[in-house]
Length: 407
Image 1 (cartoon, rainbow, N blue to C red):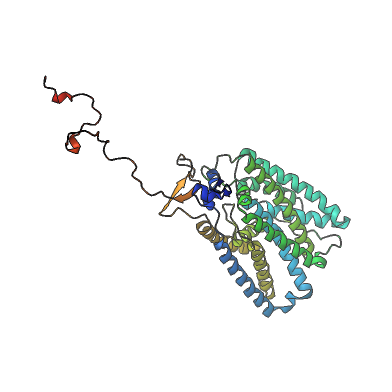
Image 2 (tube, rainbow, N blue to C red):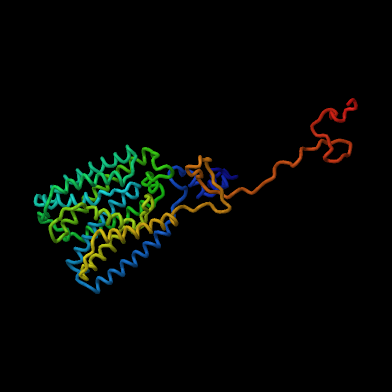
């Protein structure tokens, strides 16, 4: 901040000659990613395509079975969207933190079995112990990932194996006990999920929040530790991811029309991660859209309802694999067109020089025009004798040695 001739404060751009946007990027830490703001246009375009696909599939469902979009059918569909949506939020939160939690599916299935067995004692009595165990287990998973600095997918896969051991203690399907019916509050559950998904996307689009949440994402050697802030955020993200998976599993069990069948639950993990990637969240972490999760989960569930109305049997493995494949293509688009702009032909990097392994520039500023402030030859001493410029004496105070008459 400078001052003009009247004594009033002048803007930073006027006092330094550097645009304000450049000054904002000067304080970006290049060790935590590219400087500058991620471009959001690619997410806007993709989310518009998701909205168009959701509208098309909804129209197909209306033509095939109008009852699925009104009355009890609509309420059941909304609860199904919320159930899968909680799993998608769980996977998306960990994915934004660059430590994807592959245990969300087994955790959800374990929670569904627990709720089916203990639901007759009341929702709160069955839910609170499950949430406490999930929070502690997710925090332990986060500590393993952060302290050992290992990939989240590998550590969570080990955690998923431990949860599957718990699930395999049951050899037959479990009928849901109790009278909790989430369809009675379907609209409130859906509004709450939509608000959580959209607000999470909005906060994730804010530059400081986005950088903080995605700080665990490697920018050079993946084995390098990313600091205390990155580790803390990642551990909390994994704990929150596990808690959200429990909530999703309880809703799926309560919304089902039959008993809960034991299994691995990994098919739910594949479907949840696939839905998040389809929504526009990068598989590398940090980057993501705003409405993508809501639209992608709605598209998946409406497609399943349409397939059921036509008498098709769609495996979660098949649907999850398809969404995962498309989501990887979306990740490529997001990383290619969502990163900050690269320097143009008239731009140079400002900041420390770097060592070749980490991005060295902090900001972009126009390259200075070439100037010629040094004279091409040394100044000529003024004498009374007119001589050629190249033969004029400059710094010598005595006769030159090769002109000495004694030589």
